[in-house]
Amino acid sequence: MSRVVLSEQFSLVNSWINELRNIEIQKDRMRFRRNMERIGEIAAFEISKDLETKEIEINTPLDTIKAREIAVQPVITTILRAGVPLFEGILNYFDKADCGFVAAYRKHDANDYFSIKQDYLTCPNIEGRPLIVADPMLATGASLIEALKDLLTNGTPTQLHIVAAIASRQGVETIEKAYPNAKIWIGAMDENLTTKGYITPGLGDAGDLSYGEKLQR
Image (cartoon, rainbow, N blue to C red):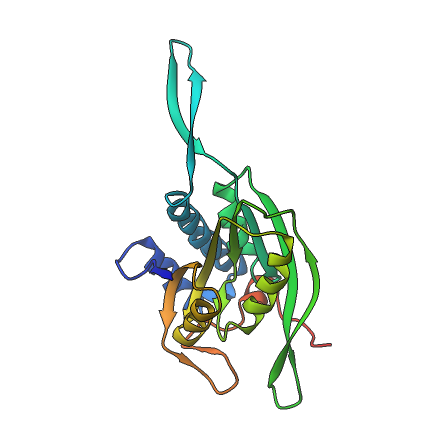
């Protein structure tokens, strides 16, 4: 079990999270998406330090040198649609990775309580490869667990990395209990969930803030 909260030691990540939360700055969708993307890029950089490497030989214009390179490229996945900007940030750095996608969402009833619905999954073989899952808002952990159940039918990864921009403590503990070998990379961790399962203070609906409000069907 391992977790890393990127904002515990002050860096630019703190500034980006501040902007993600700010209801005035949230009106700029492009800026919101870019800040999510930046957090994904930082997480990817940190994850790269944990990956297995191999020795390679490179011919430069002047000599031949031995160097280190990623041994096995990861598979990067996300939960549509909210996870796309965070996913894109990770993919910006792991540009040779393969990718997978899961369509999972909260199905709300008349009282705004929800169940998890999962309709679609496409993913390459992850056997023997690092798996990175981008889930921008790790609230209860229910949708992520459902996504992981299906993703892991495509093989057993060598490592499981989960990246969230904001997570609740309860959600993190739920994932750690279900997947004790996972390493969770969090932009910021909030202490509370509302009675309806939303992170507070959180930032709102990451999908709506990235792409506009949706109709519930």
